[in-house]
Image (tube, rainbow, N blue to C red; front, side, top):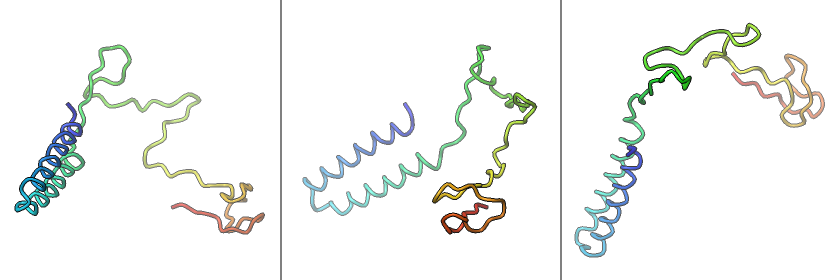
Length: 121
């Protein structure tokens, strides 16, 4: 069972227990509410921040991906191009996002509609 599914089931059980305490034992309702919120914070912490490394399935030679423990190939793509790196900057926007007019390089304002050109760093 996945960690998220397990914590979802436990969260429902804890919420149900808190509701039972709220209606059956109103004297302890404050404790139940604080315990519920405390558990909620703990479960979110375990689900989202304690992920760890996902398991890598080993390839059985069928072409399902690289075998466990091997790095992906950095071979050039078709046409002699190399694969883009994850840190590569996005290409500049060469059109106005408001009116779709093609912009000359280095333009600060659109010549057709006058809006400022968006520049992403």
